[in-house]
Length: 300
Image (cartoon, rainbow, N blue to C red; front, side, top):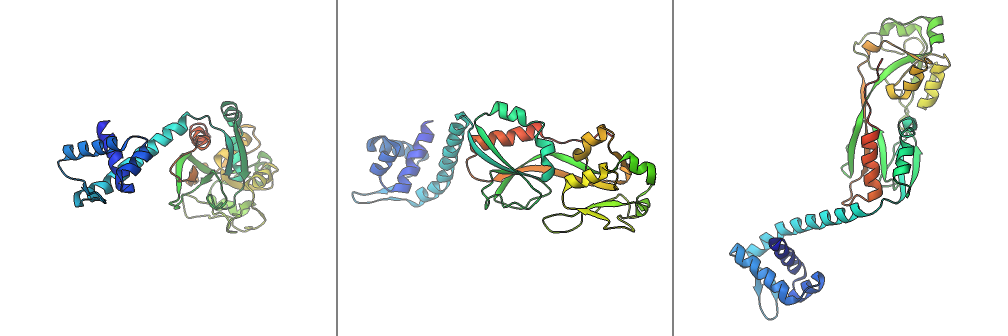
């Protein structure tokens, strides 16, 4: 601890160029600052400052040492600030963006979050659009895919896979496809990404029978909920994330087909601005969703 105190005093003097100014910043006497620096110099066996009655400057060795120590002291101050924040009760407004289908992931665990953190006000945006996390002032976003924005930090929530689903009534009237190429004889319900207007591709383990076949644009949706609803109503076959239709499968509203022919997977992550200090309200949200919203394989 004596060495750390000496480092802190040395860096403060190096930044301010004065023992008196450093003493005021550290709330100790100028004599105590001088003694701390002197002990540090004695321990290192080098002179860190050139001293005169009119001027104080770093020696060559002191300048090299100052560059390294500044980063060390800065990291110690950040660690201290994080511990201080950790002791505070999480509170305040938290703006979070999730995909349109994200309510299926969040709503089941939301009561537990609000019970644990009654002073956090959640402002949630459910949308499939591209979100400028920093530009729009979002505290966090939950999204699938890979991200290359170096301004953001992220934490993985888990993976999911895609499934082909249709209603029992639809398959009773149209028959079950036995291979991907059979989809050419079925109504394929397509999803169009709102962010770029492109149709979602259906990924198979073989190159044969790439959908949608003869009727590619019979029904196209830019909302996953509407897409699933159309499948439940027996309008055709949909290609959707497994977690999105878990309840419908359990209720026998939908059934899966060609499960062994689909290999596509996705990954959800929670992302937030990579600022130095993680506020308590954001820290507990990130930790909570990472613990409670992890995805896993759907038993079929």
